[in-house]
Length: 272
Ligand SMILES: NC(=O)c1ccc[n+]([C@@H]2O[C@H](COP(=O)([O-])OP(=O)(O)OC[C@H]3O[C@@H](n4cnc5c(N)ncnc54)[C@H](OP(=O)(O)O)[C@@H]3O)[C@@H](O)[C@H]2O)c1
Image (cartoon, rainbow, N blue to C red; front, top):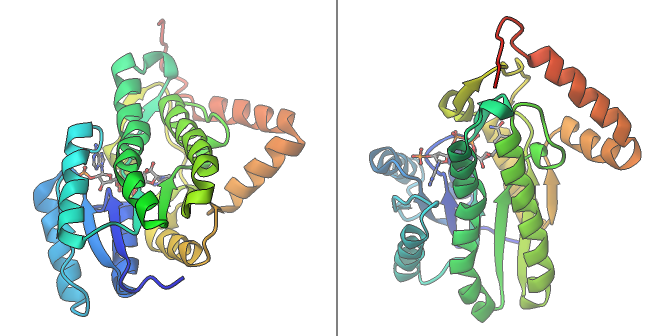
């Protein structure tokens, strides 16, 4: 499939994987609409892409909090008015909370679900009717390796990504005869700002890496879109985890327990 001329909406386009994806799509001559919450930052990104890739129209920059359904309704309306429709939606916006599950407040769980799960759902509910009318469309949901198995100290994040995968699979079955492809992407550790921006609730520390560059992840995603792939695992640990979970689930459990002990902050005592 050719990317040139395709109208692509990317959420969370101002940073990390979303920013890298915007660059790759621009290079491939897509017509871009970019969104994230921080308006100034987003406009700066759109301007930079406009000057780096003068062969495409300067990307539309539409600030939007995807957690809010009304915001998303406006976003999709604006995109459709300006571009005449959306061919590819990339649900990439995401946040994380790190630390002991017992210290993670219900508000933290809600805010992660609101962005990672409901944000993607809001966008899909708005684009699917038009994609059905067009008889085609691609929706790419950026999940995570953490959707495959609960990882210690990332309960809210893992739950939100596992829910996103289940939602994607349900929709995939329902929309299979409508010409709409739903792709699920499972990145592993990627060098982005998510770790700096995440709320830390304490009790454990992040592992040191290794981290893959966001540009490499973005290249692989665009290649997979061109090949109309349905699922994309982006790291060896992701593929291994998925395989071992099927064949040797006890080994995955034991490994998660070992990781939990290794990452626990030993000096801290938490009494609930
Ligand atoms: N980095 C990794 O290791 C990794 C691994 C697996 C999966 N992922 C997934 O990859 C996706 C991109 O994350 P990243 O690592 O590139 O993180 P990042 O650098 O922090 O980028 C996150 C993007 O999402 C936007 N965003 C956050 N909340 C939003 C909201 N409510 N509405 C609209 N936009 C919002 C941010 O911009 P504003 O703050 O301006 O809104 C930013 O553009 C996420 O879904 C993440 O879960 C990342």
